[in-house]
Every structure is written in C-alpha cells, then in structure tokens.
Length: 295
Ligand code: HEC
Image (cartoon, rainbow, N blue to C red; front, side):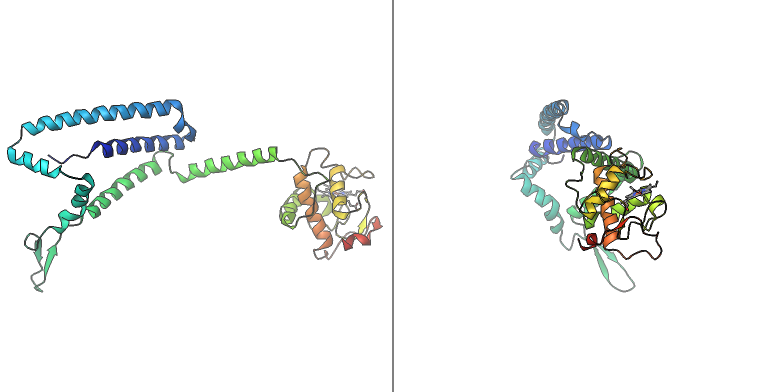
C-alpha cells in the first residue's frame, strides 16, 4: 500500500484538470466566455462536492484495509504517513535516490578495460519529468491531428476572422474624416498609393502624370475650390468636378469613405509637392498655381 496524497492536494489538482479540459473544449469551439457561465460554475461546484465524497470513501477504504495487513506493514504505513506531507514529498523525490550506498548500486563491469560503471538510480524528479514529456507529447499529438485545439490552420482562421470583425467594428465606431479635419499625413502616403492605383490610375496614371484626367504632379489646376492644396485635392475627390463629370464625386456618392480619401489626398499631395516629377506627363491644364508649391 502506498502512502496517501492529502485531499487538499488531490481535489484542487483534479478540479484544475477538469477546468483545463473545459478550457480546451471551449477554446476550440470559440466559446471561451462559457467558462464563467452559471451552468459551468454550477457544474464545477457539483464536481468539487463529488470529489469530496469520493475522497472520504477512499479514506474509509484505506482505513478498512489497514485492518487486514500485518502489524509490521501497518507500522510502516503509519511511519510513511507521518509528518508534513511536503517534507515527505521532498524526500520521495530527492532523498530516496541519494540514500543508496555504493554497495547497493548495480555495477556494470566493462571487463576489457577494468572500468566499473555504477548504474545509479535516476533521480525521481527526472524520471517523472520524463513521463510527463511522454504524456504531453501524446496529448499534443492528438490535439494537433485529431481535434481543432492547437491546429495552426484553424487558429489562424479564427484569428483572421476576429481581426476582420475588429476592423469592421473599429471602422463603424470611428467617425470618418471630413474636409474640415483632413490633414496631410506622411504615414498615409503608402496606403493612399494603393487605393489610388485601384481607383484613379486608369485616368491619372499611377504616378499621377495624367491620361484621360489631368496631370496631378504639376502646378496647373483646373479646379481651385479651396485655398489649401491638400484641401483642394480632398474637395475634388469628394465632390467631383463641376465642369467634367468624368471626374466623379467619389466621396459624396459613398464610393470611397472619408478616411480613404484622406489617404489618397495625402498620396496626391505627396507626388505633387515632394516626390520627383514623372519624366513624361500630360500637357498642363488649367491655371498655374505657383503659391501652392510653397505650402
Ligand atoms: C474616369 C476617369 C477618372 C477617374 C477614375 C478619376 N479621375 Fe480625377 N479627373 C478626371 C478628369 C477628366 C479630371 C478633370 C476634371 C475637370 O476638367 O475639371 C479629373 C480631375 C481630377 C483632379 C483635379 C485636377 C485639376 O487640375 O483640377 C484631381 C485632384 C483628381 N482628378 C484626382 C482623382 C483621384 C484621386 C481619383 C481616384 C479616386 C480620380 N481622380 C479618379 C478623370 C478621372
């Protein structure tokens, strides 16, 4: 008969294993919030009570069994169960191994070289760690191959969907930029370029040098609705052109949102003011607006 593990260790350990299994189960079905659901908590409480009952039954059996063994064995068990549990555990893990004397150790005689190898017992903590790795690898193997938990593709899928949902919520809750608060931002140039290439490059070329639409990199402007160049660009993209419906009202019609127009405007402002001019571009159209270049 082995010495007993006290209930204040046994029950919490069982309970944490059960909670961990619930955790794994809920996480793989993306229902992690169910872990604090009243029904789940009720289940944990019932489980704890059942574990207590089981523990007392075990205790009874243990005490009954003590009656049927010899006096010597009983004494040994009492000795083993005496004192602080943690001290006993410590002894079980470390001390038993140190205790073995030279005479008791198995010796492997190599014979040919006269060296005698001592086959020392491995420390208990080491052996247990080894078993633990086996258990862990088995659990990991199954959870990786057979269920969704810890499957990287599934995890990626969930994370990706969550990300999209968060972006959607963020976009819904943050008010879109309007012409009043739109500003040129260097950080927006690159994303602006991407949207520009999708929506504007057919008529203006991706470097803005002009095609059906005018060259956006020179100082000549047909539309001068705002005093500030950046605002003027924003204005034209939002409202379109009064003289030529080919340049449609991307903002007003809802085709492109305010935040994206701020990005595109930053890109157009950048290629007009700061970036090197394209080698070939459309002939100037509109009025020369040299003062804009000083902004
Ligand atoms: C279908 C072709 C077409 C598309 C697509 C288009 N534009 Fe235009 N764009 C034009 C034309 C044509 C004009 C000239 C309008 C005018 O004569 O007033 C123009 C004018 C402009 C102007 C004012 C230039 C000036 O000199 O006044 C800006 C700024 C501009 N476009 C930016 C954009 C941006 C940014 C996009 C993408 C969101 C875009 N355009 C998409 C055809 C287009």
